[in-house]
Amino acid sequence: MYSLREILDKVAKNEISPSEAEKLLKLLAIDEVGCLAKLDCNRELRKGIPEIVLAEGKTASDVAEISRRMLAKNGRVIVSRCAKEHVQAIKETFSSDVVLEVNDKARMVVVKTKAFVISPSGGRMGILTAGTSDIPVAEEAKIIAQEMGCAVFSTYDVGVAGIHRLIEPLKEVLSNDVDVIVVVAGREGALASVVSGLVDVPVIAVPTSNSYGFGEKGVCTLMAMLQSCSLGLAVVNIDGGVAAGAVATLIANRAAKFRR
Image: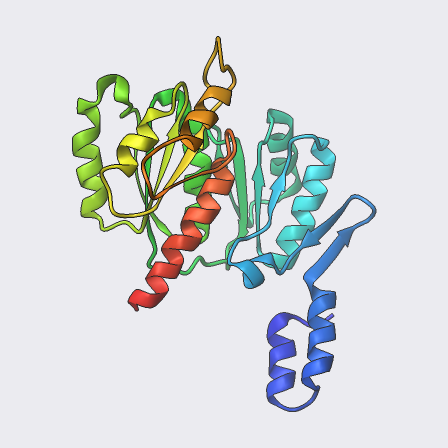
């Protein structure tokens, strides 16, 4: 199978027709790991978002094998929702000739070949959390943004229970001329509405499951964010740090493209 660059070179040299190139690209788009998984290896080229391997619900050995195949194809693999056994299996799979980054708070692992380089997109994103218990979800968003070439400016524990804590961090985020802000909050989710009412950039709200009692497990938070009267606010699913990071970075990277 040809690489993407080889296919493009062949079209440029008139060695293959555009229709033949299209067929090869379709074949290149998906790789299989036995009957275990179909890897969307070209997702980043197609969408600007890399494929992310969800470890949750998979055995440690399956995650390790999928990661090995993805690294061989793309030079990088991002694994989310990792338990300790997933992290250990990944560490045992790869030798010291790769760059292996483990973020325990986010429960994410990123493995790269030493030759893999992330090109800065010029996009700028802010991240705010209401409390320290919201940090793991925020870190998911941060990792995705950074792996997509976006600069991230984050401040944690600035929720409305002590709204005076928000003012300076929000000023700092805005001073970096961010294109979008991700707000991560639990409980009643008020921080997202407050921030959205103060800024002139899109806000992506992430409800977290850090709540109990009536409306527990993030249900109340999600409903409150969806009901917000502050315009310019969009909401992802409960604990959707990866989803928030992806959509926010698409916005930021798109804005950066037209700045250049």
